[in-house]
Length: 299
Image 1 (cartoon, rainbow, N blue to C red):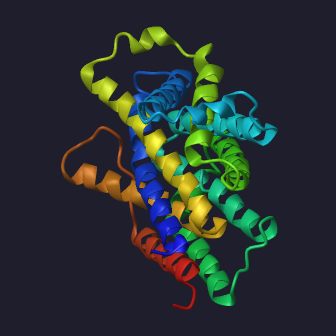
Image 2: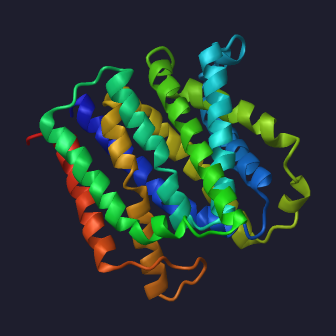
Image 3: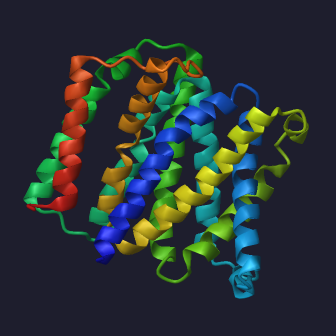
């Protein structure tokens, strides 16, 4: 299998995991505050990854903690802020709304692929970007209109989400450079560990002590989601172009809306479903078509 196909598969796996993420985060926000949720996500991911590293005897992986590069430290702070901003956005608004605005991050990453990494963009792929953009506009038309007349809390949530998207783009740009020098395991182990310490002082650990079995299952899922999604993302950025990764990740909202619809149909009302119109469905088709054109080129 070619490196490009490997990268695309890793990016698709990340998109699938993040499609579930917004829904589960909204559920977690009903019994934990944002700081505690972010701390739990990072700490669980760190402990699992550390256990795997030690069990395989890869002690040299820990050497990155001795003298980490400045770029890695900045990437850690950026991803930490992304987690918090996104969590606040979901808490103050809704999973669907947060998934719309957080796509600001992949868009910035796509632009960085062109302007920073000098990745070539064919006319066919450029047309794919235009179609995907038009698709998103139709898909989220009603949501975008609602942003004009919103409460202060809703606006605050949107600002946090856009901030989180910006921080994620910076993290991803730095990560694409770092994966050329370090293994993804080294990078993620450092990021998860240091980010856990950053949120430790703000987390309310007493909340974790009174969780039910179901609530703990949600928290553990969030930690596993972090570990698997960002591990796959790092591999995707290593094997394929940044613009390919970004367009696949922008499919997250479509997956989230589909999952919310399925949950509603089977009677699971854990999170309020988002309403889809004919224009929204047409827009979804446009997004998928644009993604195929960008990833596959003229093929």
